[in-house]
Length: 366
Ligand code: GN1
Ligand code: MG
Image (cartoon, rainbow, N blue to C red; front, side, top):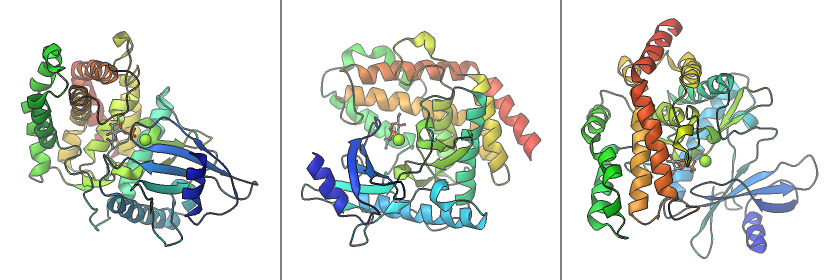
């Protein structure tokens, strides 16, 4: 494996002599490695083997990421920021391509490792949540005037109508016979089908606008700086044209959870209102100038929407025999389903309060 990794890395134009390449983190989708180089001066890099089961068009995806990072860097430069730390830098091969496709049709990519960053798996303080909200808010604000369309490399990604299509097929096939023990869980999904479709209709008919969005804003997809401020939004694989509500909603699903995404102890799981408030304040401070009334009206709802979607996706993958998410045990996707459902019900209980917070900051900050 090491030889393979060194061979792949050698196809890219990198500074410095490679010292080592080691696995990094525990992504659910891609395989990620850290490339260290000799000496202090040359940078380190992140190498990834993209999951082509999910990303069927890696050239399209990397083209999107190049467009988005170029737009971000121009904005950061104009504002006098540090373009090498505040946006991702994509490295190219000797041929100038942002990916290398090997003989097995595996797709590899490299980006610069951003020095002295801090990442978190949980938002353990309101200050951190505020910084995270600011980070995603700034990201969206910088991309708000990007007119060039992105390639839709993940059709239907946060589109619940599309998810129901997949869901209905998987349930009809029941390929590993798991459906019979899941009446209760299936009902969790079915009982909210209409409510979720009604919201998505507003995106489909343009009542809620489509913009450049990240679509995977959980807390470990943003880097923080040494002083606790937001530094750089990473994992741009899912940048798409969709609604900004996906990003706010997914962040709320991740930041406000008092437990783990796959917590076995459901007593640990609930929505933390203090974290919700801090993130919302940070986020609206950066976005209030361009968000429409309809977007604001559905902001709190989007937290429920994305959490619901995640319940559906984890349960659907479990019924399908675990083909999408990496799992650590046979029941992992079911454990995830239960934990996300607990979070959803906690949001439902606090929904009125969530709306009040959004309304309060919408007024205060505009
Ligand atoms: C995946 O790649 P990662 O781990 O950041 C997934 C998200 C899910 C998330 C659940 C392309 O994100 O949509 O919300 O897991 N990404 C893709 O934690 O499906
Ligand atoms: Mg990630």
